[in-house]
Length: 114
Length: 114
Image 1 (spheres, each protein chain N blue to C red):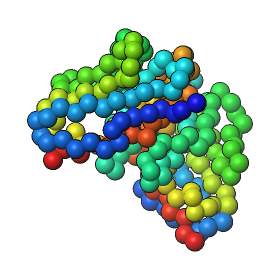
Image 2: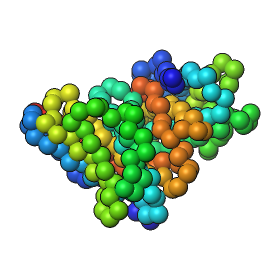
Image 3: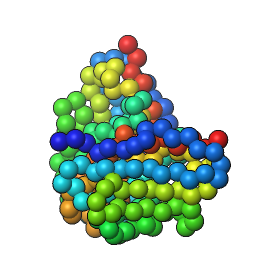
């Protein structure tokens, strides 16, 4: 079975500072994808970043980057130069390459303080 | 290209009534997925459909819930004889053929059972 754990229910960061959200996962498979999704108050699910497990290089997307540690089954999200619009729930998610469904963590509520 | 459309955005039903949730996938997408988000939780997979076929319903409750994706028209998630525990946000996602990791989410339908 695949599980995703986000151990930080809530976090806050000052505007323009950097924050890191943690995620660990468990699987016996070797080939999979990892994702971070953002859910603002509108509830729309927005893809932030995606990482293929076979790639050693960490994915980056503008101010967002990940630290992917495959052996430790860890996938953290770093947000640099935090902006007020980053305030949202952030969900870590996992998908097997042979699968068709996401497994989501319980989310981290991030508040950016002006 | 319009995104994934869901309607209604909000639905209130009394216990025992039926709820019908609709999802129109993005143009050109033939795969539809339904997820449920209970309060304070991440999204959980319910069912995966292609046109006229249910491919994976491993996340669907055994009773009262059904889903379809007809040849013409939107995908429908139907909940019969709703109970308070069915109150949740229901998200639909769609993907192009065979790229399951490219799921685009709709804005969700928030179902409230009174």
